[in-house]
Figure 1 (cartoon, protein in one colour):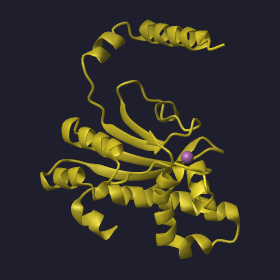
Figure 2 (cartoon, protein in one colour; figure 1 turned 90 degrees about the vertical axis):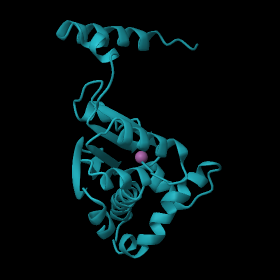
Figure 3 (cartoon, rainbow, N blue to C red; figure 1 turned 180 degrees about the horizontal axis):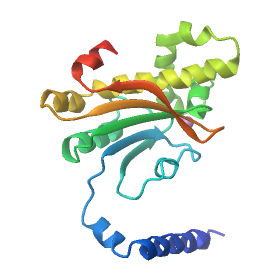
Length: 205
Ligand code: CO
């Protein structure tokens, strides 16, 4: 009961492997971080950002929540965004959704799930904005896939309109906001061709 021995064993093996390849990796890592990317993704266990892009510790600043939502009233994601943009000065913010997202599906099905309904209300707002486009598809799978993609677009828009991102652009900071979606069936990231690099582009989105 409550035995985490396999986690500790695997962690030891992982650290040993890294030290074998790069003996000073952890010493250097402990000195500080300067990642180029802020990754905003879903909490889903099947979408591990560092692994799927074959990145190393130190490469990604990460925020994950159910259905990769950026809400202006959520102090958690806004704090991450502020720190990443204003202090770490990341060059790229990646909003990565995924097909088959349980959060998006739950929002679509409109069930009563308790506390999480308050969170899913953010995604239901996206549905209301794009209802015609989503319902235009014939199968439920296509509707949900479209909804997952439009949720990414909506969260890119919310990110672009955050005061920290707007201030960074006004100060001439090099900062791009991207929208991607991960396919659980193939293990591949798909580019949604959303890349915003200025306040002007954001206002046209
Ligand atoms: Co998800």
